[in-house]
Length: 178
Image 1: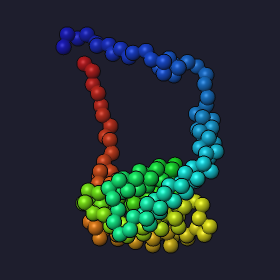
Image 2: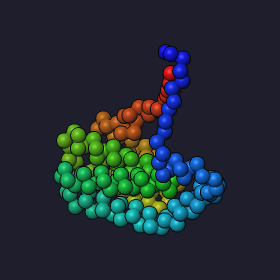
Image 3: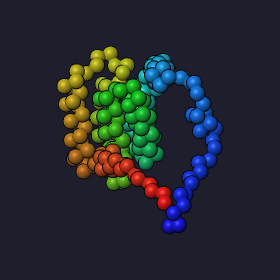
């Protein structure tokens, strides 16, 4: 190297200019405002969860003993929607049951299996854990239900999609210039 320092130039963007300005909203106020906005949509979200569970039930119960590939793809899409909303509103047991249904349906698709019975069991679990349920299950009962769903996945030899990625975390990267 010739002893000169290299300069790094960052492009000017609208975001970088806004971030450099003084003023704005205090972090805590922004977080509180975001939390309130999310909470305001809880009722609408619960309605979407309810309609997604009802759609899964309709598909599973009308399929007979075998599901078609398009039906399984629809179930997977609907269950993924439940995962997203359940996670956002911290419906932990519902989130776990919907993730299990995603794992099951994905496993069935990849294995070329069409059995509707385990999907129906998962749909029943979703119904019991839905935020709109008239009689919510106690935490210990919910855990027994989730353990039963896990046993279904184990029976088929399906792994969790989230665990299959190993839970690998992104390591800090160090960049050197010079």
